[in-house]
Image (cartoon, rainbow, N blue to C red; front, top):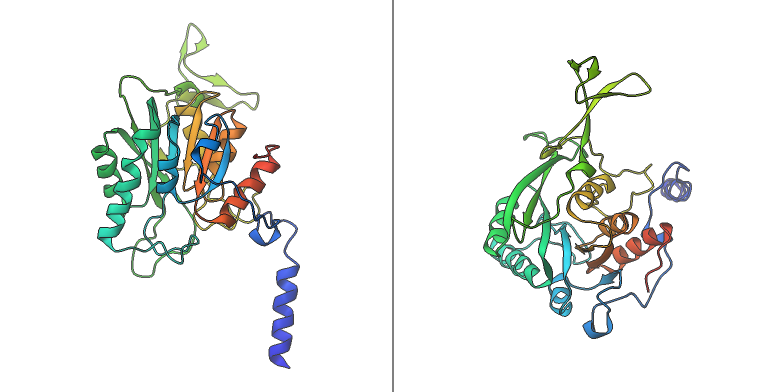
Length: 303
């Protein structure tokens, strides 16, 4: 009887989720047996946007003459998480070989002025840097962003940062829209010249701010959580604001964005919102369904 009561309570709790919980769940999505794939590259127009179900390395081979202006990749970090393949954990040798394989294939699908951003944690960060350089990319920076989520460790420092490596095909010719990503900073000493503010403005609320160049340390981001409409069940989802900053800086409207290991589709969703064409690739059909559902919310129906 006690076990039955506990089971009933658990069932009711799961059915009566808080109305404030905005998480997009896989179980609430319609089952699709006909997800878009890259099985036949010749049938896929390079101008077409969409999220495709398939292996990334195989997908890169099938893209043929496609050329992307911006590539954003959020690969598994070899931590043993389940992305639909039971576990992403490989031996160190196999993980390195796999990483170098897909990074090495990126030049074949990138434009001559393309930019590349690859996410990593501290354990695989060095490998990502090495693989990008060995594949012919010129590394311009390493962004570190504060990922405040989860409990602390009892016998170690809490892990709350991740890296994003930024590289370009040609260090003399690439897009970087600095004005689109300048950040507001409070002015501590508001200097004036001829009685007028020097390099700062006063907001209607009376705050004195200055638009400054962004650094490679990002501490103003929030990992998606249950009350945010962008939140999904994906275990390593990136914030939309993080992706928005990258796309605004390193692409122009109408450019093509390649979203590798697209997961819940964040990069594709933000690319569409900002007027870029996009191509997402992920091996997990459930995550592809999440991405397609989020695009539908934005008013975009993939073919």
